Amino acid sequence: MIPISVQTGGITDVYGIDEGYRMIKAAGFDGVDANIDHLLSYGAILRKEAAQFVTAGDFLQYFQPWKDAAEKYGVQNYQAHAPFPCVIPDGGEYNEFLMKMLKRMIQGCRYIGCGRLIIHPFFFPYDRQMDKQTEWDMNIEKYSALIDVARENDVIICLENMFTGYRGKIYSAICSDIGEACRYIDTLNEIAGERRFGFCLDTGHLLLLGLDIGKAIRQLGDRIEALHVHDNNGISDQHLCPYMGILDWNRMLEALHEIGYNKPLSLETFNTMVTFDRELGPQVLKLEADTARMFARRIENGVNR
Image (cartoon, rainbow, N blue to C red):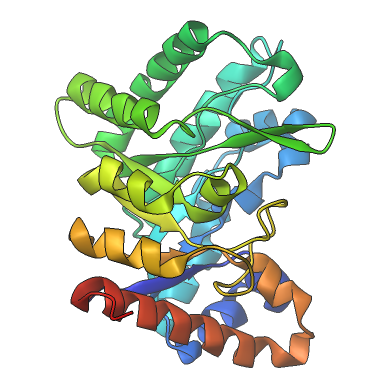
């Protein structure tokens, strides 16, 4: 049976990690996508606070709440999300701190019993974008530098399809071209000499760029190691529960059925939780879990339109 999970962000931010995990289990989820990226926010990275995290002594203490809650409530940390951005323009030596930070996140994954870490590809904002060859070379170099620590900690690193924006307009970014994404995964696994890299397919990012989700899934095939399942209106990255936006969900389920997908089905729907009043949190989580369970069943058995 395909396990179902939900990201902790939007839940543990409101209710705390211990109570959040309890609610996630009570709603019917098997596990989570642990938002350990919240240890270092986007703004904190831009303020160069990653250096403080890297130089801290017992850094595993930061991961203790996720470990304790998972064990207490019988919730599996199926996958986790690393902080981002992973590189900043003109970052100089600070970008080396970001690489050390990623290595600590990989070690943290092992500590909390998590086998997959989503690390956003290394790219710059729209107005600082580099040429594709330079971008390719940088990503191959940086991901390759993580192979040894990923192997030592038995963690699979997952790349993700990205987008960027400028003046309110959404543009494609690294790995939004699925052919490019496949080349990254295959090249990095060849360098590693084993399956050490996979892909996290983000449904909302595909929708924003008007890409065919069924075609993307079939092209990626078993390179898919993780999912970020969420919906939007096709204009903004809203991170809503399926059916609150415009994505063709049967198209996704049919394609996942065809490729024999059997890994966790994980929702990345934090904005659904914060849209409703806190008192309704358990009911909202239950609806999300029921939706994910239905998806898992249809992936296994096929979709009857």
